[in-house]
Image (cartoon, rainbow, N blue to C red; front, side):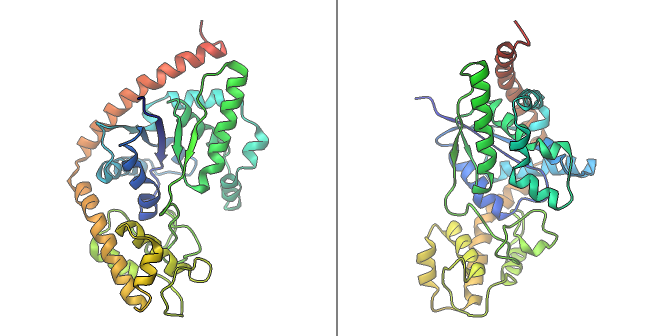
Length: 326
């Protein structure tokens, strides 16, 4: 039976933290068993913000290295750097001619970034390139969190518009939403999502942090004044976030863990969380440190060559359908 094809990408901006790992990378690795998987470091998307060229080059390679260390296997998945496959940008232009300005202007992330002072054409048309990333491989499903649902709906709208105008060519991508660990909160502001761009480095645990650093960050995590372990996202967001993290790294439910720690203090819970995270991330860190830059770049080049061949097959047909070739 032919397996469904899925695509997902990650920006090389900032360091990869456990929110990225729990909500995305861990699930990407598991999907290799059941899907035909395509994963991409979306470095073109990173250009919507000012970049120091040398830092971006380093971040691209570091992000690719983390994907491999986390368990993305180039023999089982297609993995590459977005900018090495120009068909992404070509399809983005074509899809942009079908995109509604009004729809793009209503995108939540665009409005949020405008409020922070960011404004450029790339930021406005970001969802079009995201749609091209998905459609250039004609994928059947996309693993996304709830905060990306709007972008996938936009992609589905473009599929409708393209297929209505040019014929039924692109499959309609479905959404795969991870369950536990899909939304990890900041250790310092537990009502806000853990973010790579947060200026406070203690707000997040990096996938490459050593055990001592993890323990220090968890011990300093914001909780509340009740000193009662219970899972209550509204009243106890800090403790609930720690229980969510512990659940992912132990395989237990948050209810089981809350009951187990009901009689213990916050200090004991934090120690348990820190040890579980440090133990769980240790193999990823070890693999990361063992990968050489040249080895990783070589694997990305090989992936880009194969991705380019696949993407070009799509574009040959797209060009024919829209009248750019005979």
